Image (tube, rainbow, N blue to C red; front, top):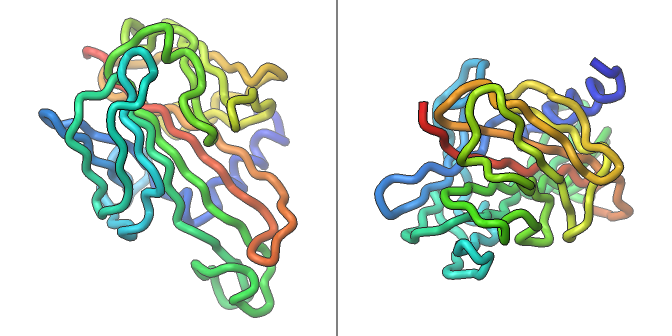
Length: 230
């Protein structure tokens, strides 16, 4: 693996807010946002609670990429809807690493801060497809499928673009089932080969320096989930 990619991945995984998976499950006519280790190769609780204000915004899109319903807040977050795509923006807030440990507070609220960051997370679940969904749906960091993910079989490739504020992001770290697959090119693109049926989880992450009294960096992650027939 490229040493720079490996280092970036390790730095992303080192953040407390990113040490768990974030995904959306669908049961009947309802969606639920879950956090934990259910889809991780490492140990830990299958689900872990999160704060009631964790979800900043949730948008349910139809197949023409039009917003059908919106919501926010709640633990666990739940929405009753029938979406072609559901996109959720969340944040666990600011984190500060100090000699005595890591605290879930802004840099200005801690002492002897070694490193600080803001965690911004998102997850998109796709349940129906149309070409209208092959574009960014939000201004957040987002994984955008460029071909229909729901028709793929084992061994076939999903073509992706990572975007932020609707623009391609080069150099974003991409993982599949928690394993690094590479980084996006100058057009924000990356191909991922599907390795199994059932539940699929692909993630992208970036870190960016910021000039703020609250943090040194912002750590953004985007997760794409969908399900294939086994």
